[in-house]
Amino acid sequence: MNKSVFVVFVCCIIFLVIVGIDCPSFSVAGPVRVTSEGIEFLDGSRQTSSRSSTWQDRLPDDERFKPLLDIPGSNPKVYSAVLDRETGLVWEKTPDPSLKNWDDACGHCYRKELGGRRGWRLPTIEELASLVDSSNVGPSLPGGSPFTGVRSYYYWSATNDAFSERDAWYIVFAAGYVGKGNKDAESYVWCVRGGSGGDYH
Image (cartoon, rainbow, N blue to C red):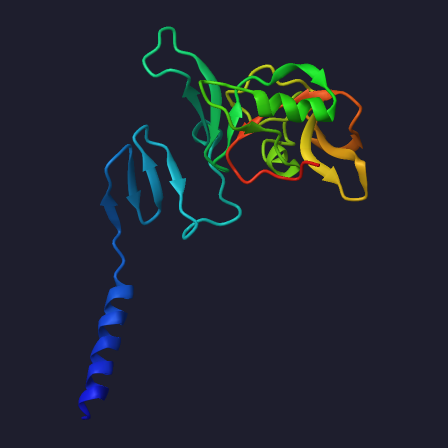
């Protein structure tokens, strides 16, 4: 056999062996353990990896949402934000109780500081809709979610109407209805942190 052909053959065998290895489980430093099925947190909850999950797979409500401490070790403990493990977004635990037009809603989130963190924004319509559980009403949130003070009313999103720059999309949390309306109207505001955001004008 030609020497160069032999070298190529050996390299191919080595490559196939390497990519064929599948480690079922290994530990990493920090509060998680990575397995072939996803991420396991120290509190026993799990986040399924995309490799083994399907569209029908959903995290149980008691595992999906994790309240976040403002100041670790504080007494009494204060939780002002909630991590959604399904989307990776961080939400206000209690949305602002005052009504605002769309421009003021955008500015309110931009200026917000919560738990010593800035970088808040108005969510897109897709992000806001990810909180809706239409099997519940008044408000239409997943059962057992840790959010408080959510009104069964209109909440602004950052998403503009494609056909009119005077309108933006909103969600009515009475039953999870998605609609759009004039930006001068007043609705509630629920700020979010993380994700890609976008669509302000």
